[in-house]
Image (cartoon, helix red, strand yellow):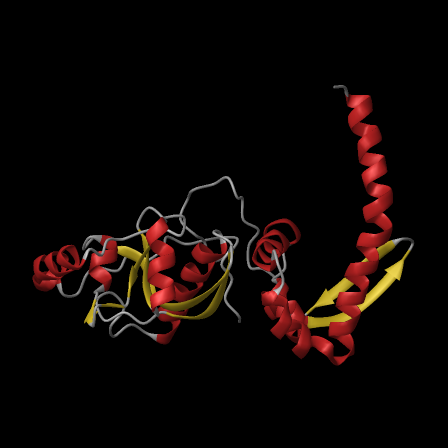
Length: 245
């Protein structure tokens, strides 16, 4: 009801988390540093809330939890009550994201305009859309009820639209392959690819993600594909789905 009550509650919370929370962090990081990273990296995604913890670590602390637990910790030191963790370059998040922004995913701190990929097979679009309609397939986001149906059936195809929206369709439905163009409605995209996602209760874990797309990325260079893949990773991460490095 007042600032004084809020401050008092904060002090009481800090007394608990300041001691026990620090112990947990030190134990986990020390285990990773001392050679237990393989076990932690494999078991971590199975723990409740791991996806949320990963997203929070990258958004609020600027590092990739999965990469850190998979051998990305170089050193740990404690001085004057401050714990410093040295991370390998691959474990440091490339950019701190603002969860409230809806802008397109960026790749670095000084982003350049992202490349837009056109549908390379526009003549097939009417038939592809009609096939998807007959099969009952439509583009969805990760909060849609059909998302779970798609990922539990197998591999999916994803695109990040020009507006920065992540759209998903199943790779194959009723033995019929669904094109990437269906996911975007034939419109240009910032990135596209395929992915495998595991679902454990309310937790969704990224297994594999690629920038493979014959409709949008066919013939692109390795550097362009890598940039598209990073955009895809970030788009999924913003929804709490994190893929291993």
